[in-house]
Length: 261
Image: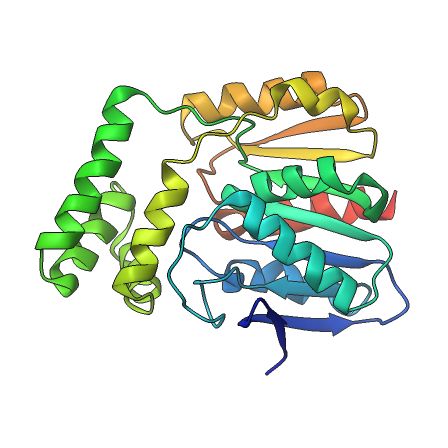
């Protein structure tokens, strides 16, 4: 398996497709992994160069505890790109991965050909209740047997989802160690706000939002579309927080058209 070593941590990545193409780099969401992109990669790899990455602590990357942050993930992406001698890349980020993509683009716009954001927030919207829930989860994680916590959290995270989706979430979280979950919860409480810097983004940007996701994310998707000058917003009907999994054909068509323009 291919790994990139960053600060003595091994990060998993997988590269496929045509070598001489500008690579498409996929960034997954919070406490998921690069498998979220398998349908899209399958559609793209015969005509494009694709790279999927597991953030530190996720998927097949090394699971070392620490105070994880979007800035750290963005720096990991920078090191990976440099190690692969890539000059420019197309960045696709979902949810938290979208905020990492935004951070990376704002810091290294000369390295980004195009940016695609899927159900990605532009700023943290943490009410007192949400902060309290995250803190309660941290306390429960400390006192509750780990296996029971994982099952409880999977049900909480996928409330209203099908049994199969709950099972997938459970399988993913079970592979993450207790100290790393604490590190991931630290990201949940992290404050960020890219609002004032969006006008600096001049590259073509595609913003995708599933219309069944939370209203606050819909509002932020509209905000992104209004404040990134060279952008377009696509609302995906009958999709929630992960449209690339829920409506993969629609998403792959949108992305392929955007990349080829």
